[in-house]
Length: 457
Image 1 (cartoon, helix red, strand yellow):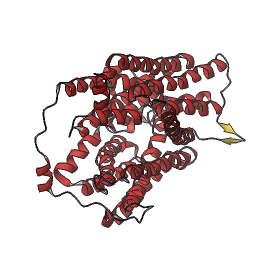
Image 2 (cartoon, one colour):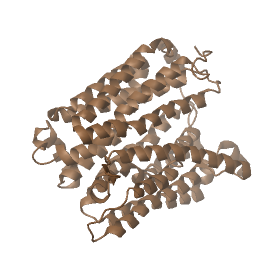
Image 3 (tube, one colour):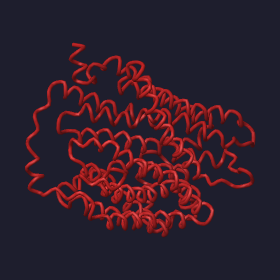
Image 4 (tube, one colour):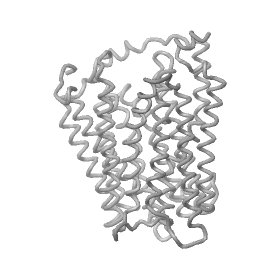
């Protein structure tokens, strides 16, 4: 199988896995594009919220921490919890696959659960059950299908990096299309049509995955897994210090992403009230704003890669922490831009132009391109031998905590002016950039690669 070059010089299994992932991400981002709008504009309104089974217990749990919540505030809090838990459940999905079911069975179970969750969204009473199915489904699906991509290649196969680029390209296609298709159906026809389209996408992904099973990597025999579980070498003093530092970085990384994560939470809610969504006589669905962001995200990731490649050909390339600090400072200018937009309409009934979305997306995505993927590179490089999985799990904690925090922050949308709300986000993201520069100054030697650290000693 590893010698197969049937798919753009790669194993045929990469094509099946990429196409499956495209549909899974289509379903996920289609649902996510609609969720906070659906909750705040319909399901959590006083006349509808009573239909949701179990909502009183969830609301009481949230309000025991945050205080009383309005429909919009409760919607943002629930969305934040959902978006955060999406990054926590794959840890358990990976253990389930490794220790009990194997990756193929776990991925199939995840796909079935996600499809069920999307279709349950058509029934208000089952809303929380639908979210539970989606979270469990993503947990079973997300990490394991990516692991199967890696298993298509031998350890020294240089095609591995380009394979994941192809895999990520499929995801980006889905991220652009999902808000347009599911969002248009949900906003222009009916909410349940949008969720139903997401469910159909997941069913298509499951069909693709089952059809391509013959080209997927074989499961590792249990005996081989047990043989591989040899005792780890004890961590060195340097490894322990790195571990403490990288755990301590999590709150800083959490602050660095709040502007980016609000694009799916507070930003569409703010936009539907304060942005002129009519273009050439057509009422642009609010969910399309996320498609704009996805387009800029793809373009800026490519631009960032090209820039640093050019920079490295001229002078020394900065380390990961410096890149993340610069990325955070740049990303902070995106909510700062919305402070200006809010100021232009303060005290009036006017609305801002759609062009502000493009400015926000451009600045935010340029910065974010140097935060999330660069952080992944740092944590994977700094991990001690045979502890890479643990360190990546630790890294994803900032997305779990960050999305939950963003859900709480979005509650201030009703209590603050636009200038105050987005100004707060600009300060939080900028503070992360400053803290990262300080960490670089104080602990740069500890996080440097081993050969570089030895040269400095």
